[in-house]
Length: 377
Ligand SMILES: C[S@@+](CC[C@H](N)C(=O)[O-])C[C@H]1O[C@@H](n2cnc3c(N)ncnc32)[C@H](O)[C@@H]1O
Ligand code: SF4
Ligand code: SF4
Image (cartoon, rainbow, N blue to C red; front, side, top):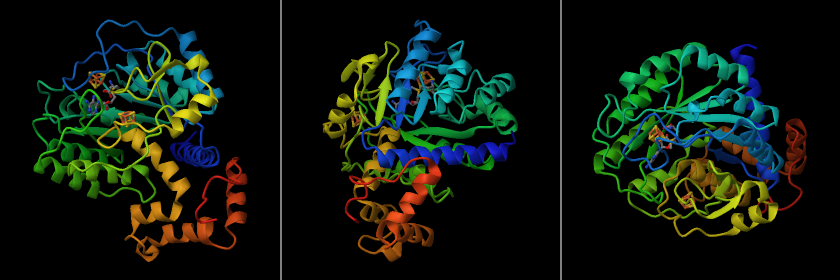
């Protein structure tokens, strides 16, 4: 299949995942699963790895993926530790796709070769995030552009999946401007780029210096597609200024973190809550955690959980949320034309029910009959 056709198929499945998330408020959107806790590196800011763990057996991983698929999870991400250390990583990807979810992986990239990239293509990987922390390796992290640029070039040449480069800022990283150089390199290779703000061992903000705040703004100003959730990092802007962020964390419901022992936790930094085996995790658990309020939320920097929460913000208060993302408060005319057109079509227009039903049919996910889009209805 050509790169373009594959990208088109991926966009359709992304849209379907989003449409289903709008339709079903308690269905998990993203689950991160850990196929091995072991890592081949030892970044000093990280508390998510060890040196000794064995990979989780393939059959066990398959049954965890099956359970997540049965719960309706839209996107299943392999993380770690270093997930490419799992000897059957490609088979896991293949199984995720076979069960109808989107398959993504977060890796330090050290084990990427043209052969591994081709195996990931063949397995049906949808998206790969490679973490690059600095230009030259240092005492904090060896995930440097110097070592990983060759991997980026291989990805550019061979990958049939989406590639995102994730840089980190703060927390004692000595060269803040490296994040900008990494983001530019990613853009030159036509990859996406995100920046993670380093958190402490509870997922909480470590305040950014003035220079780091500037770099975060400069990376955000690099052009990105209009319709990309990575674009709307309001939470990062607020946190960078040291301000608390008002949001509802949906961990344990829309976002699940499944550790190497098969337990569901809120996220990598709140392990131990609720710590229920995935095999017995039910819709009741999803409902409870959708409503639960997490005291760690105001200063939480865990980007993927923030982004998933945006779906519910949009679902519950579409016009207000789009205004907050795109326009000036109270003025829909401040929004870009395509966004205004979509608001008119799906949210405020007279034929909105018809438009939603048609879009739902097209994507295989009927539009909500109640509960979603409520304020504008
Ligand atoms: C735990 S790693 C696992 C996957 C893989 N080993 C890697 O480094 O990409 C997942 C992501 O978490 C990020 N990360 C780890 N510790 C962090 C921290 N304290 N603050 C912010 N991001 C962190 C890493 O940079 C990486 O992008
Ligand atoms: S490579 Fe990833 S898992 Fe390993 S220590 Fe660094 S951040 Fe942690
Ligand atoms: S707010 Fe949510 S994502 Fe953030 S640390 Fe707490 S449980 Fe984890």
